[in-house]
Amino acid sequence: MLQPPIFVPSLADLPLAARQVAAALAECKLPIVTLEGEMGAGKTTLVRALAAELGITDDVSSPTFSLVNEYRDGLGHPVYHFDFYRIDNEDEAERIGAGEYFDSGYLCLIEWPARVAGLLPVPHLQVSIKVAADETREIHLYINR
Image (tube, rainbow, N blue to C red):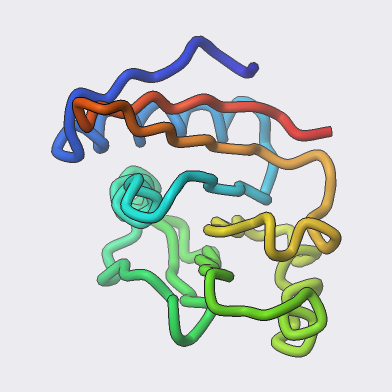
């Protein structure tokens, strides 16, 4: 684990967690970030808050149907946001050029990464969001080697 778990009392508190994720990103300098968690765990909400931390002023939304959205960070660099929930297999992800995005060196934020596990470069930063019965969240950061 990269750091102690981040406890999030409610979705409204995700911006504070995003600040800690941004700090971990700066520390590990890995361009690939996977976000894991059940449906409704807050993956896209965390991406939205992380985008604000990175200086992205675009409207950040889930790329569920387009599979990938491109934003620009505060330095004008591209940031790619993927949602692989609707793909059927890794071949489909390859056809949209996922490998080229992953190899670009630019930040790639990937929701539902298990669907493209064989395409993911290592190492990468894994963000795991677990929802408790009381709707609080626990976020764990790992470097997946």
